[in-house]
Length: 236
Ligand SMILES: NC(=O)c1ccc[n+]([C@@H]2O[C@H](COP(=O)([O-])OP(=O)(O)OC[C@H]3O[C@@H](n4cnc5c(N)ncnc54)[C@H](O)[C@@H]3O)[C@@H](O)[C@H]2O)c1
Image 1: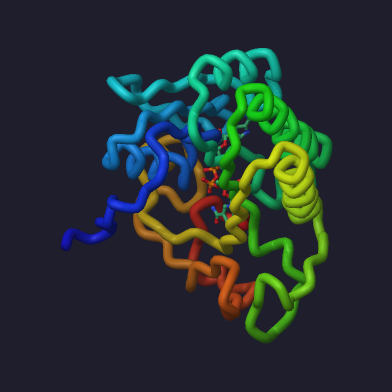
Image 2: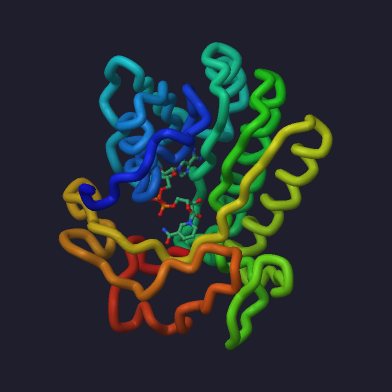
């Protein structure tokens, strides 16, 4: 089997909307969806500076901001995707600390605008990229139920708020949400990222382990990024 190739048989959706689809994770998610022949709508405002994927049959990119409620409502009610993968966020931690109003505006109000547009379009499935940053820091293994959460900085504050927003939305709208609390993401840094001067551009970045929530995953040491660069250098 080719590296990174997965069994497609169980993928449940024929159409998906991806926010932040130009980003480090988003570009790969979009590519995987297209490999599975899933009709994909991409929303990204280009904040990070990476290009949106080119339009093609089954792939429709929109360069818009998730805070643009009118545009979001119109796109979601036009395409009515079966699911949304919500990745768009300001997640560079020093930027969040420096610009808390921007971080709350994009991450919290932008998410609310997406949830409202999704409800309006009758979308009932949403996957959200939260972060391992929402866990209360402990030296032992993390567990998604037993480990307490704590907002310790602007970024984790927005992600934890997002988790409550999603829980509320799902309960009220009878929708399903899946929250991924991943930690630092590891992968090849694409040339486009290097070209726009994003730290980590130009080669492999190895940050230690990906620590998705669930099943008692041991968290990488906090300072591990000091000896190897993260994709976003300061991203969680
Ligand atoms: N990279 C990591 O290590 C990591 C770890 C844990 C969680 N996450 C989360 O995963 C998600 C994706 O991370 P990534 O590494 O791909 O980040 P990224 O910065 O590469 O991608 C985020 C994308 O969102 C877009 N965006 C930002 N603000 C927007 C707005 N207002 N409207 C529309 N688009 C907007 C950016 O242009 C960018 O393309 C984020 O929500 C992040 O918090 C990332």
